[in-house]
Image (cartoon, rainbow, N blue to C red):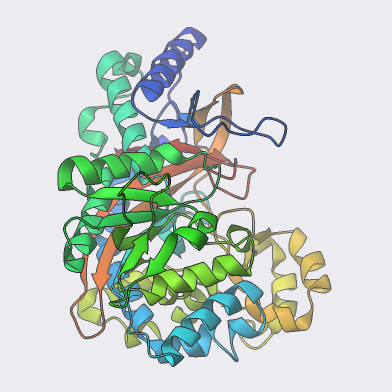
Length: 498
């Protein structure tokens, strides 16, 4: 594991300058890009006028070959696990519903209440499509100890950067083939740079749901945030669907859907054209794919929650359904670690033991590992992270901030938080990080490996699922959060080490 104590290899300033030029121009040429930042004084124009390269690392990050293979193999067990959780109404009601998280977390309550109302009305359950990402860190509590793979979280809604991650892996392969990285490391060879086919993998899941719907000229609807800067990560998927599967895509915000969406007597979801032309009619939707809706800020008003419920009232496949979004709650992740709970959903022959081995200890903040409650979290503050029921980065509480946070947290709200043992990545790994407008920074870093998958399922039928590619996000070692979109990390890829 010498790569973890001497990475990246030594290069000269001139060589770094050349790699930076090659990487950034390759990125701009291959849609490894963002829309530029905007402000209230200078909003994004309705028609994009410019783009910047996504934040990136010049060298791929070292990951043990066997652990990388294990992460890819685990995804299929996780796909099946969360599909089955989403179909277990009683389990989700107990954990996320009334008497559980919904009583202490307003956002979870809004989602669960909408789902419960649809069930009470007798609306048939939807065809569920999960596009998932399971995130991992390498774990090495002390120097010299065996490195293992531990899960950070499992994401069931709006998983991003799949398409851009394929591009950054291609960028690193290009740098290796065009420069041989100046011969600075024998590790930087093609056999150690694994292929990444995430665009095709994710598009296949969406196309399978579209075909299951059964109307070939229907559109896939992507529900997006207004002023989305990460639009190219979504557009690459859209182009793949059209060019390889012949499927059209419509993009709308919740606000736009509030007036454009309707349901026919047969429960078909219809969306009116954005700019109607003479004799142009609404399009039927086969799949509703959410690239928003994962945080309270995504619902600007009660009307947006009503729109979300309207979409799920239709017979279009939901990616994710309300049930599947709730299944991705941090509280569910914590409950699964309790004795016997995982085995309720996954048999030993389906990988239950390997899944359990990928977890660190978790417990409810209001209960503690042995009924010790919040006091245990305060006592062990330097070893823990506290997590609410939120996605999107910037929500967690770390280390020395925990005691003060717990002291001011109303006791009733503690049930909405979980405590999780800190994963301790190997130290001594460095990287050269490049951000548009901010230049290049060399720093000690931590990298997070994410594995994508999809699952298509409905009550009473076998789960259809596949692993669908991977990503790496790298951040400075002293930064706790890792979200690229939130400004904490950069996109990266893998160099396999033995």
